[in-house]
Image (cartoon, rainbow, N blue to C red; front, side):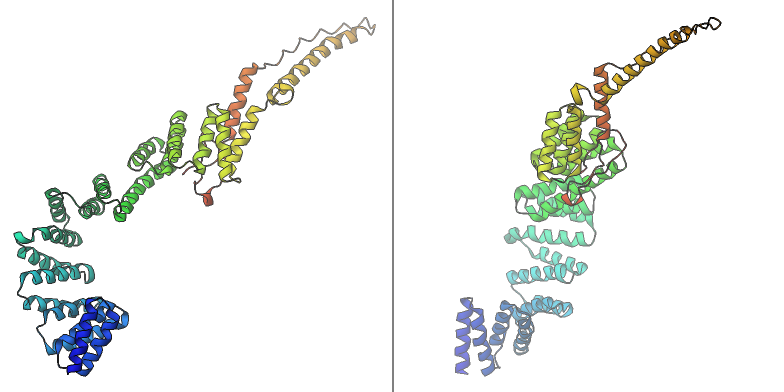
Length: 448
């Protein structure tokens, strides 16, 4: 017995130093030598639980049960055993242990601690929300002025229960009261945002709360992710309108999405596409420049900017953008097509004549030849000496072809070139970047 007591004391010293691996061996030897005392079993079970391996789970439960067999009213052993049963998902036994511990505990601080663990267990582990509401309300009823600091967390726990029970207005009231009573906490802002987004479908309010949560805690990845998801919902709706060719409505949705998340380059690319379809090429260029300010190496953005500059006659600017796109992806066919159109627009053909100029010259030559033949042919007939045959009446000269002025021809040629450069919108993601020819009017462009 003396050796067991000595081993137990050594185990306690190691436990205090958090050397749990060595402490376990001392407690094990102590209970093997003396199995008549409850506390060594309870300490042995606690240390096994602290090491928290799968094998230790069952061993710690066995140790707590043996300790409770010797001391049935040990509140600490009951609470720890409830935790271990919860981990093993034996929810009925866990709840039974929590309730026994609450009935036995008389001290308020310890009772509040048990209620906190019990409430979290019912919410997170067993998801028995009706029972959780009873436990949390019991917890709140015991909180006095001395425990004001605990009110916020317990009220938040009640809000979580009411949210789970779909009692949304009650949850909103609780969270808004907490939000207004003191400097707001990031997790309260997140919970309000989640309620607004998933239950009340007020996306504007949800975004506001998520943004406030990020201001209070920049590391709140939950708020950041939910905010990005909301932005994506706006973008998806706008993209659906684009695909249905409702460009005016899509422009309004894309502008709204861009206002909420200006750094999403997809939104600016597709906004530019819709503006181009509405013949607002200057607006499209402004939108693309805004998007490229966040992502200068975006393939679709550089390509589309090149097309719009080309439409407005800025061949140098268009060439620069197409070359930049080809630096990003040398095989990107829309950029290749755009660069080819720039080259065709700049090359007037041999000796300063393009194709339309040459065609007009051929028409003039042929017309002059026909006119000469018309004058020469009747003269040949009258020189035969056949006096009984009157000379043929001279043929009326053929009119010269109606050739438009050179400037008009050049504008027509540029317009036709622009109409040929109209690839199908494609994704900015490299693996989806393909180009298809279309027979529609410009603008073309690569959609985000």
